[in-house]
Image 1 (cartoon, chains in turn orange, cyan):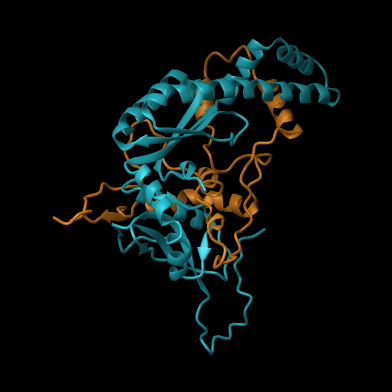
Image 2: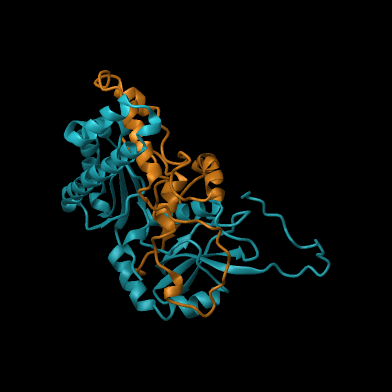
Length: 137
Length: 263
């Protein structure tokens, strides 16, 4: 017997931001999860992983100056209205300003393509697994 | 740096040497899971994913060309996507990106067999549970306005900076930025604590992640029982409405329990 599975791919939840950007993927799979060489060393292959630093937020003079600049630009008088419009135009996740983070070149370049990649995946039928009945009866 | 993957070989394929392949390992799952034939993983073209089994557990694996570095965006996405899709249906212990062993036999003998019991126990714990990640980020203008309203020094610095030419206010601007960073960090701490408490009753595990952005309000992974997923998502929706334009709330998941497997 197999279990019917709903299409995966994260569809259909109200109010949910769709998809995750490369930055989200990096946050999750590069420094979380089981680490295999903590278990085994013998036959681990030393395959080269493209250099990717997990992003760490480090407060720097650059960050400070950027905040100061943003505050300086604030127009206190006209702030009460119109905020949501301004904000909603900010792009989400993937590619950010130059002073952002330490994701290195390869990934930054790749990040721009990521949306396409995910979108092209999104059309595929998604169920991947099924489970055999655990006990015969 | 470019993404060039030019082959360094001379193209002499006369002897048709076998490709140098390794065995990429995605995660550990119960033995009674089957994977559909169209499931693919890392590599270009993406390799077909299969399962090797030992006792009550199995490992999701695929061939991988070890002559080529891993870590293109497609590889990262493929790794997470496969695991998240699997996690939506069955328990799975995700491996960190980039685990490659020599052969499927090595996976059985050196990974599954020696750790069979602890993996099996961990999988039982994950039965019926998946992970979500809540990423909340202060919207820039509202949070800066809050800072100026709440902090007299910040407000005074801003006035001073606006009155003087830029060349002479570098120190003030650095001080202002530092102050803002500190105030946001304090807000983050308070809001993260509030988020953790708020979801305590509808989740079974919480891991506070490091902020991934200087305006992060909260970055928290939750382990959620599948039967409570609807409650949890509703609670996130309520939080999102409460915070309104002040904080952008994103919810990632359901995904494999990356933050809840420990070595």
